Length: 115
Length: 111
Image (cartoon, rainbow over all chains, first blue to last red; front, side, top):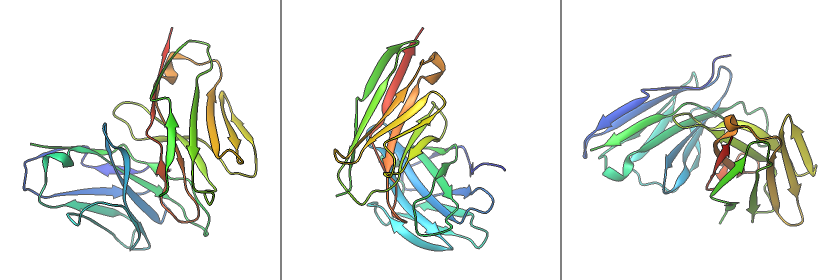
């Protein structure tokens, strides 16, 4: 089975621009979570989508948004980019067959640099 | 607030030694405790995970020890190798809640 894929892998933007990142989960996985990873803050949860609905949300401003499509693919959008948005953005997918906790599998990430 | 505290921040061990990374949690509702390994430029990869109904789980050279009463769990790497040099993250969650990650431990295994 192919793993989680993320595109693009690297991105350079300037302040004020917006960016869209894409994530394709492992085939059959219905949940997609997004994380921001920075050296200072570690891994911080952005949001989780399950069956096209946002199920969990972290403490990030409204400039960060996401969505999930019927095929479970997900996109994350950041508007009005700030220098502090420079980070590795990670997507993780999980199967979800019941109410219990399940393993999350991470993609390689998208490295975003805001100049 | 759900928190997972991880220590040490960095660790240097000689090849063949047994690095130990510790995590402590506060939320007694947590019922799933995975460890992730991350190499530079890569996403975290699941290493091993444990649920609170067992006190220890071993997979290859990696062992999780779990102490429910102390709300602590730790990762041991037996016969460590230079290829184990990476950043390790502990995490915890319950049900459909988000994973809460520790701050990470940068492990260096020297030959």
